[in-house]
View (cartoon, rainbow, N blue to C red):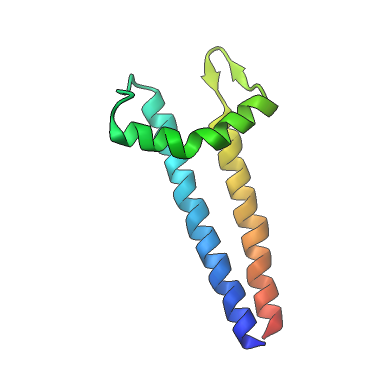
Length: 99
């Protein structure tokens, strides 16, 4: 059973790191959107292509744009924090219970 426990811990760590990296990518996209970025810049294109599918779904479901400000990155960041606090922590505690 310790093998499955170690697998769950590794899965929780990878999920936590992936969510943290994605959160920083969302923050970078929001910060870059405050200036007038060159749409042909490879970094801007990468940030847009990696974040737009998630942000578009949030904008479609919850039109949170007041005064020209887009609040969808805040919603995504809050969702990431919730997933890190709930799902990742639940996986770690489940793995600890299997030992």
